[in-house]
Length: 273
Ligand SMILES: NC(=O)c1ccc[n+]([C@@H]2O[C@H](COP(=O)([O-])OP(=O)(O)OC[C@H]3O[C@@H](n4cnc5c(N)ncnc54)[C@H](OP(=O)(O)O)[C@@H]3O)[C@@H](O)[C@H]2O)c1
Image (cartoon, rainbow, N blue to C red; front, side, top):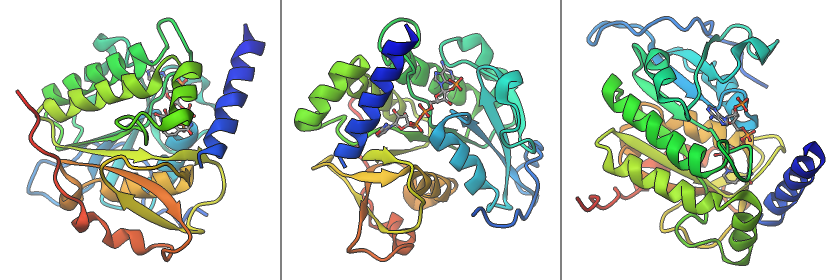
């Protein structure tokens, strides 16, 4: 029922608000395979969720990284239209494990910004934010990727209070399934970074500071553009490896100062076997 889905999306968007220029390209998004280790040249980053509202901004932000070549994954690449025509688009569906290996061939890095599109059924959080992330992490381990950057959510550990309770109710327990997806990644042996944004908005990025925090305390909001900037900065950043952290807008911090925040992050405790 499209009207129900739209109403639910609207409610989720309102809830997100409650909790609360692309630079000239230095290279084209050719999707070239990374050069063998030890040789200079762009390394391949594969972006899952590239058609999404955050994923599109990740693709834009990646144009600033001349050290990275980009492959974008969509469930229906033919339907992508004019979205980032320079990117190499390939087909992949995280609920279909057999589709994943080919998308990761030659990949050094994975960025995952996927999110369930339905409250129940095969595209619900259970099968996308948990099952899908699990499938993608397992495929990334097989492919030997150097870093898996996962966009999760603030509130997955704390529950997010009343807001989180309502969000779970509306979304099909998205926060709970996202935590299971995170746990699978932390236990997988794949080098990782987990970024947990507060409620997402579509305001322009770079207007406020961004606070990095750990321990899943409190709530907040952040623009999707700022999430994309943090995620792309985390790629290949040694101080981001093995870290789970939350991000939210903070007017008291200088815009851009967050770029010095990675070294302050504490490594996650070793997962229990
Ligand atoms: N909304 C909030 O306030 C909020 C707060 C914190 C965190 N988050 C999380 O932040 C992330 C980005 O959110 P967003 O609102 O920017 O996302 P979005 O616009 O809803 O995009 C979701 C993306 O996931 C992809 N996807 C869904 N199912 C898939 C599957 N089976 N296989 C491959 N791709 C699949 C979609 O691809 P298609 O084009 O094929 O559908 C789309 O690109 C999500 O994980 C979201 O849960 C959201």
